[in-house]
Length: 136
Image (cartoon, rainbow, N blue to C red):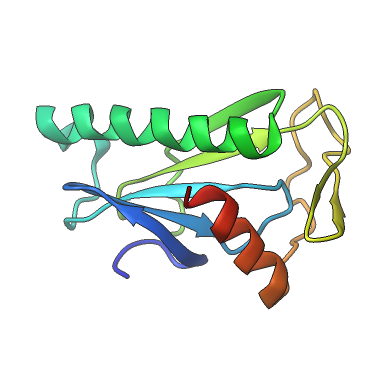
């Protein structure tokens, strides 16, 4: 997949965007929406790409709501390390959540999460479970 490193598991693709899991799941359900064409400046997105981004953002949020009922979301175009246009979708949780028998916490909620926050890479079983629940 073109675009930012640190992504695993493409969930789906639209005309303009690739929606994938972030490799680091220290906040359960972290996803990234990556522009499918090469571009480094968010301000240069076309009106059609903006419209499609909104559709994909609503869809990601709906799927995360159904799967884990996050208490809040952070959305960020960071592009510090990877310049390709991409939007991070970061769910936040007031209490623990479970996936495939594993517990996930957001210890800093409701404050800003710690930077850097310890990385959490999912096992193959956990990743498959997350892909299954978010691909619906």
